[in-house]
Length: 119
Image 1 (cartoon, rainbow, N blue to C red):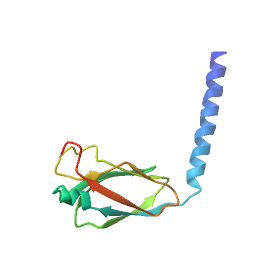
Image 2: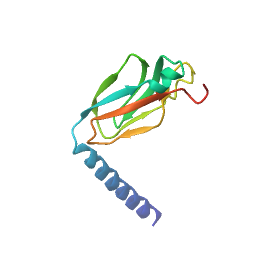
Image 3: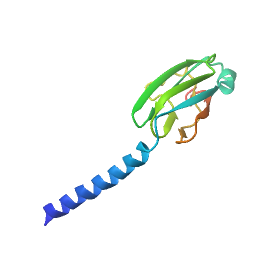
Image 4: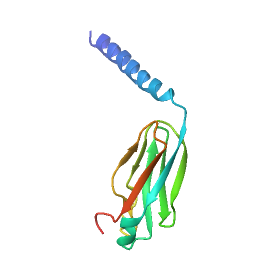
């Protein structure tokens, strides 16, 4: 009896996961332009920043200068998530002021850099 329940659970889980993947696969990979706003970081005296960007099939840690105005990220599958770089706790780097989720259908977003909490 227990093995029948396990088998049914595995089948149900597989069907749910398959339908989720099918939804994302309906949309081709896209480009997203991240536009940087350095105003708050410059007021704090910071001249560089770091962030993590990730999506369904990739992850990158970016280190930027306050002269960088934007970055085009190609090949995005699903939602793009922009957040603080968890590998860097150095207070000399500005960080995104919030976690941003750029959904399918949105092709650009502004990232506001600010001083880290420990600054």
